[in-house]
Image (cartoon, rainbow, N blue to C red; front, side, top):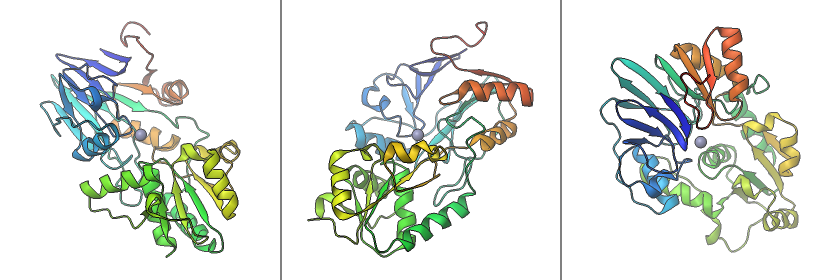
Length: 323
Ligand SMILES: [Zn+2]
């Protein structure tokens, strides 16, 4: 039995719950620190996650939660999405369930892509599970971003990315491109510090709080949700800065207008459509459950084009017998 409630519930001999806001399972899997709510309230069951996820989630929620990195019948596999992100392979009575969490099979900068393993049942995230979302070659894209930043020497730059994950990739690319001073918004700087404490990554960016004033030569790394923020935009206007957005959604022209960006790049920490299809092929499951984003589109593509039994997970719907 598989249910989408608050998180994804595997009702096996014990209840295994993945990425829920409350720790309601006998075992609670936290795939990565974007899903940071669980650790706030974990009280009963075992929490399974990577040490990096525990540290990052703890820094975001302020909670110090006990966790294990593996437990009987549950194996965590690097998911290639952000630092510490893990897929979970659950095994019971010889049956294998693979839960991907957010996932990328592409190697990106310091992150190795997810390596799919065979399973009987696959629960896969389908954020970009629509054929419109095909991403450029990663190496070529990284090269283009580095060149663009290097060529923009005459302008202050505001680079926008989610504070955990994208922002660190952007910093790595900016460090490769230029010797200009990098300044990190507080939310980004906070994640930088935690990542430094759990890995060998080091960031040269100065926290914004330690800067008297942004200089015309600075490269400022800002969380995406501030792209339309008044303070950020007044600052960008005053400095004559170029605003640059990085996201898989940059495939859509509207992404540029919604964020008010001068330039955008299709830089994502998820699989694109083709990579999702390849991932399913490599896992080769009997049954596929899709969730997030284009869950219906992708499930129906798998069924009609590839002959898989595939279903979008629906809230509070039991998977067997209700389809
Ligand atoms: Zn995520």
